[in-house]
Image 1 (tube, rainbow, N blue to C red):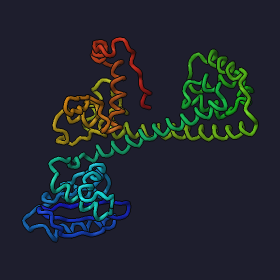
Image 2: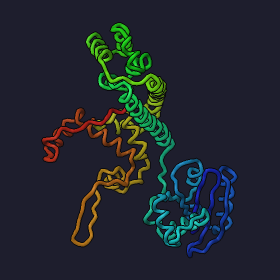
Image 3: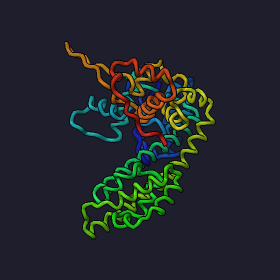
Image 4: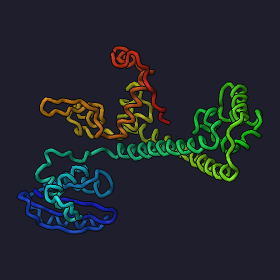
Length: 374
């Protein structure tokens, strides 16, 4: 067998080829792209026995995605995606001084997959449809997280310059809120808004009880507040308008990308199975499928799935001390999706509600609902 360590960068790869005894057979720096992968195949072919197949080549690399990894898998090599933290700890076996080089990392990766590959997980061979769902679902979730960051920044600016808006406007990323703040980003401009103008904005957003809400919003805008100096108010006006524009653009792109998530997820053969689970709609189901993948042999059992999602605890035992803790080394995207599913299932599944009521830890404590996935 041959063992290849691949330390990748944006534009090149440092590789080392070892035999089963750990003897270095070749090392090189290869360019990213077709020329580099062709050169890698030549290095492997020059040292691989004639009667050996590509399944006798094990490659260690610190990523599990990208065209380079796909090309390695397509060639028939056994590709092992090594966690960078594991690789860093393994590198300390060779040097305690903290010295580091790309060629040294390639050597460590080759040694790691040669001696410890039974402890590592190969790259899962997910289908092309699952990869497509993963790309759009992750991008959609990232945009949602970006919008949350921008909303928090907008809220911080309003708390310091226009607290009445924070008090009376419930959702700072809602269409009517953004339109009102675009029209009146400062208290002085908000005081000039009429009930009719506010009602028109609420009507375009299809709100209910428009008359009552419009009067309440105008009353809040008309209430006195601590004054802000003119230059400071002008600066906050620019900041609020910029944040409103960013959030509006993110809302548009989230909607567009959400349609792509639904379209790609709907074409996957496992979509119906995921949607049959209580609490999973098209967006959350797509996220769960994207992170779990569809390679049938990726997980040994249900416990492996729970470990990957971070829903199973870990035990730390030393001497007479034993502590059970939450698992923080996990797939955060998958954990977020399953957390939201658990709360959505309370409305969709009588069994989930009954389980919550029977749990003595939550019997007297109402659950805290997360923000909906939009």
